[in-house]
Image (cartoon, rainbow, N blue to C red; front, side):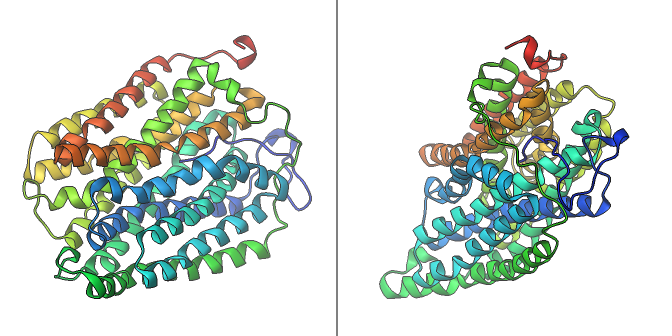
Length: 439
């Protein structure tokens, strides 16, 4: 989940690129900073996969209601994305990172009153605030990718950066499952009522609070370190023109279709990740407890981690459009296998979709923005909003599961999403003309 890289002019305190390296900066410290940000926001986003089954049990929610966690989280991309980009343009990369990290810290702290009140809406509000900070941090991290090397290796570089995002999504759920799901009591919320139910919910949500309090402390330290180095790098602060939002770019088929693919890709990826625990708990699959089922989440995101490291090398020699179509078809095949089998085959074929997901986001992003030239910044803002797919598609997937009574049938929606992506990969395998030649 990223924004399209865009170059920035060196300013006060910023490393200056030499003539031969105009447009990018050779700064190892900057690379470490960017990769750390990818790791942080990736890990925090994936914790939703652990929190959702916990809250589903505590508040006796159906699948649609449980998926509201993802809805509130990813709605932040729709509401905060463009304002966040304007903020970062105004105050600079490093200060923008501090704002984002502090917002994430506040979101983590909001889980405390949510737990004490044992109110589900407050957990949703905390998720939105946390996600708002994640959006700001992404707006900072992704444009810096263009400064780390020449344009010709953008596909590979962005995929490599996304690998650190996947590292976070692999590590965080593992420990999150131990802390959050491992504490599920033997009694069920459905067996209680009144004061006993409120007390049970308050006690059981403490595990969630402890996890997010730990994150809040860590984020405070990171924000402090970034603030101490706030003058080392600042973003370009050129004034936005009248078409800064860039919605007219959607008329360009390659960009408009690519934006739609970002929408459905993020939605499919999040929907599958969100249902892993409940999917593994089914008797027809593994029939395990929530704590054990949660331990399988890292395998899903770990597949994306491995695929992105491998993909960063493969995309240097393989046509990106063809690679995208291949992976999307692979995801569809795995869904069909999982939905029409049982036991370990159903479990591991679902988890293997993470490997197919690996190159999709950065490849779709780069293909969509290819040829935009100076308007790449505007295009990145639109695609950032398209991440809102992570809010809608999981909820629709949950609704299908509620209506049919089966999670396997709900997998039909992610399969359709991957079909759209496969078709786009075949279309975008051909080179595109610069924007000026088309619009």
